[in-house]
Image (cartoon, rainbow, N blue to C red):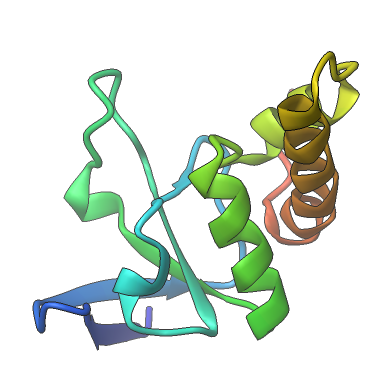
Amino acid sequence: MDTITTKDTWGKEQTYKVAEKIPAGYKVWNIGKNMGHDEYIPVCVVRSDFRIVPETLLAVHMEKQEVETLRVAANRGIDCLEAARRISRKVPKNPSEVIRSGLASAALEVFEKYTEKEEHQ
């Protein structure tokens, strides 16, 4: 598997395995532009205490606009396909929820394009 190494805005290097799709159970690592690359979105497994599992770090190549869509969505808690589906279906009750619902709908298109389909047995 290929890897990329990036430097964040503080100069710290991080190495990611490159993946074509977001595996089921992975979430966008909400580090925004701190990844240091605009054509990859960082994803990983997140523990129940909200800490990432470092050995699961992946970078998924996308168009710059798709990366930006997921960055903005992740900043509002829309960090995976399931969250995008849930929030986009919810009826907004106030202006903040209207904005979040719109972000979820935009992110849903990107997540559906890039998230691996779970195999049902």
